[in-house]
Every structure is written in C-alpha cells, then in structure tokens.
Length: 430
Image (cartoon, rainbow, N blue to C red):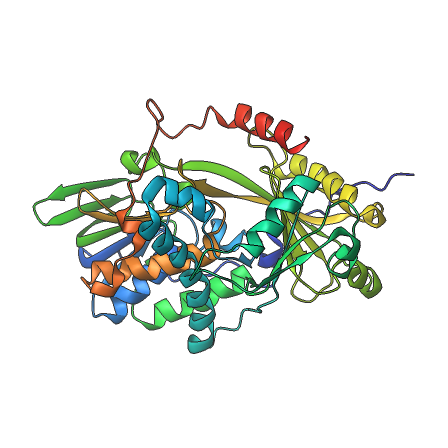
C-alpha cells in the first residue's frame, strides 16, 4: 500500500516558520520624509538599512507583506560562494582581471555572512558543514574532478573529490556518480537569521512598515517621493531590494530579472538511524543537473528539507509537494513510506547572465538577481549597497562594473521559462 505523500495536515508555510513566527511590528505613521527609503525587508534591504542607519541616516523600510515574508525566510538555508558562471566563462566574457575579481566577490559573500553572524552574535544555527556537490552522470563527475585539480590561481577553495565507490560516506544513495566536497560552504536557519538581522535593524533605529507597498516613485530634483496606501514619504535616497518580487514599480529592473519559483518540502521526523545513513556528515547537498535539486538535514537532524523545480510553470505547493517527494524517493528509496509535513515555495530571481547585479538606475540604488544563491550574496551586496548610499569607497564591488542585461521584448513575464525547463530536463537525462 502506497503512503500518501501529503495529508490534510500538510502545511504550505515554510518549515522555518514553525519556530520563527512572522514578526508582529507596531503600526506607526509613515514619516513625511526620510534620508533613505528601502523597499523590501529581506536580507538585501535589511543589510542595506543596517549600514545606512548605523551611518546616521534616518532610514525607513517598506514592504508589501510582513517583514521577511519573501524568499529570505523561504529558502533552504544553504550558503555557497555564490558565483554561478565558471572562471573560464567569466574570463571569456569580461577578461581575466575582471573575472577574478567577480569570483572573489562570491568568496567575500560567504566570509561576510560567517563574520556577521559571529560578530553580531546572531543565534541562527550557522555551521560550516561543507557541500557535497553530486554528479548526476559520469561525464559530470570527470568535469568536477578536473575542476578541483585545476582551480584558478588565487581562487583556490578547500575541496576534495569523492569517487562513486566512496559516495555513501557522504550521502546514502547510489543514484549519483560521485562528486566533490566544498568544505567551506555553510548552512543556516534562514528565518532565525532574518529575525536576528531584523532585531539589529530595529536596534539601529530603522522604521519598518510592513504591509505598506510602494505604489509609485517620482523623482523631483535631488529627492524622491515614494507613494504608499498610507501616505507619501520624501527621501534623499531610495534602495530597491525586491529581487524575485520585483514588479511594475520599477519596470527597468523588472525587465532584467526572471522570477522563478523554488519549491521545498520537509519530511515528517525520521529515525536517527535513517538520518545517519542518508546524511552521515550533515552536508548541504546539490547536484550537477541544470534543473537542480538541493537538500539538507534540518538543524536538529530530524528531517530532510528537499528543494528543486518540479514543473515547467509555477504551480501550487500542494501540487509540487508530491512531485518533489517522488524525486526524493528516487534518490533515497528507503524514504518511500515517509510523508511530508510541509510544502512551500518562494520566488528567486535569475539574471540573463547568471550574475548578481548591484548599481544605480535613475538615481535609485539596487541589488538583485542572486540566481538561487541569495543567502550569501543578498546579505553581502545589501551591506555593500548601504555603504554605497553612504558614499563609502569600500562599498564598490566588481559586480558594479558589469552591465545588467535584458532581452528584447522581455517585460518581466518569463514566457520562455517552460520551454527552457523542458530543454534542460532533456539535457539532464542524457
């Protein structure tokens, strides 16, 4: 008898919210003016606001939902070095010097989060657990192994190869063809991290206005007038920190990011001996598919949190949940009788060049397009964005120098997503 994947008790809210409920913030009047208005209260917006507030600027944060409602509390809690194109591809596009500096920004993002959590004493289950990056076919294993043996000079990271014969020392499955371990990669409870960051922002004196969407931004000379349903606020600087939720408010930015649903499930509690077999070293895990799976143990090692893309178009978490569970069971057949307790989704933002972007447009500051590596890069670029608003030289990044591309006729509706997913699934099956 097959075990139903979901039940009437399956939650469509993130697993993380069970332990970190949505913040209840007091409703206060919107000020008539501020030095900085930040639109978006995820990692990007909060880190930018923390810099500007600590730099003495009266900072107001607006969000259409509760603080951190978006992907900052919906992600899988994996932290990597964040740069998706390989060094060789970046050299081809931008030249050796620029490519090396771009890659270094990824390393900077990982180091920044670790130092921030430590120095600010944020209790969020941060741990340098390492990533097992699994090869889904033999050819990809050879590519991974060669990459570790020939790392770009000056950009070496601690890593080692795991052949297929030794794979079960890292992961309790025979479905892969070996892989590599990137030892510096980390895990975090994303909602607890967001809550700790939010507390720091509040302590710095920021005004936070949830359920207050920005409806219009109008520039007048050296200031901006930001209109909301609760009134308007005049600001010297505006920060756009909307990433996968970027909409018609900023059409230039909307044309440059591709919102993509990322779906995650949490299993019901598993026996300790099952967890010990499936994830013996508590790594975070990803694989070489273009339509990638990513997964990990929960911080208390009682559940598997399993994420990926399950359909060509966006779908309901109650539809995606059973599909993700089926994919998980293909990797771990011993979970065939395991139900899922949570199934949820969030929107990440991809860019057309698979790089994050930071800069200014029409006087407004922005950072977005993290391509699924938002815990590290959103935090780091949010911090740099705040420094840029303050006019600090150290705020400049290599990514400021990269043009933010789009495609002709693209307005923010990713009509090409379904055929792209179909194509990449075909590629992954080969």
